[in-house]
Image (cartoon, rainbow, N blue to C red; front, top):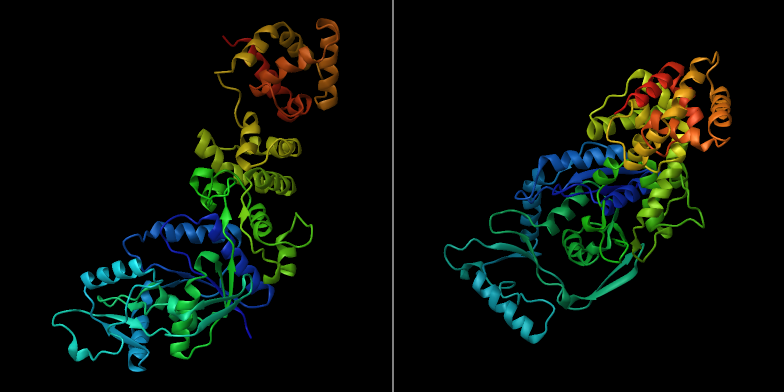
Length: 468
């Protein structure tokens, strides 16, 4: 069997992290076994449909590197096909017209609730002749669900699951306005697209039995099902915006890397021994549904951040600089010059160790992109004021240097410390740090000075000395 998996998001918002994991697992399974991964936009809810969310979904897939096979399918565009199948079910005697009024349905709900029944529709039109239909009423189309017995399904994650037939009502497959319901549309689309494996969140597990009624009524083969557990927030509640970032868009904007995202989502719902760092290549070699966890995973922001720091350290400087460019433009209204890019690249090894996200990396490297501006914090301002004399001596020492590298800068600082600061290098290093970076914390200041170069270092010290 040639495997075909699908990812069918609704364009009603940005891609939630749970949907991102579902997409990744479907992609992994298809790619692992040489199959196809297709994308379908379930856009039949036109009231909530937003074109920009379709773009956000495709951007998220591209960012994660989840390439798909064939064109993206719009479910809305396939409504004639869905209606065609509903008509076929009517002709086969597997579906029927229902003419119940809203008032009748409400009365059934009240009665069903009072009697403690699982379903409320009493199937009153299941075997009636349409000639008895009231005039002027547009009917819905309902499927004929089994009346007795047990419906069972084997799920690759949840195991064997069964429900009594009486728990499944004759649900609507075509509304009175001719619009198909989700249950019909998803089955028709999955069948027509040749989907062999339906891998999705376990909040859809109850839908399996209704969808299988349609598969069986049409004589179509049922797909293999695998329902993934939910992703919860740190407090055990369903992960949402109130926990912090909850969408791919959020995490991307905060400077997380796609390889870290995929690694973390993989570990959040699947395991391979004690491995924590799992590359995309290893995931493609190892992934299988048998390793999917049955229980929900809690999203740990600190663990994700630490994992991102690992991939940040592995990333090439040029790539990171390109990722930093939009951060500077958005957060600082700055453009990285060629000179600043060279400085950042030279100092990248130390910068990486001080950051866990691209956003943090940009903040740590800010002094390479622009000279320290006004508005120093109180501690930095005080350090600068107390170190004015020291900075004067440093400026003279640096101007006299023929070679300007980390070692000669350190030697010059030590000489000034011995001559003017009682041998305390910190009393020299801290005002120099503030003068060059505008902060009390930075990479090794001797390296920073060497990377900036003699002229820029001296210019920044001169600016600090003349600061009001």
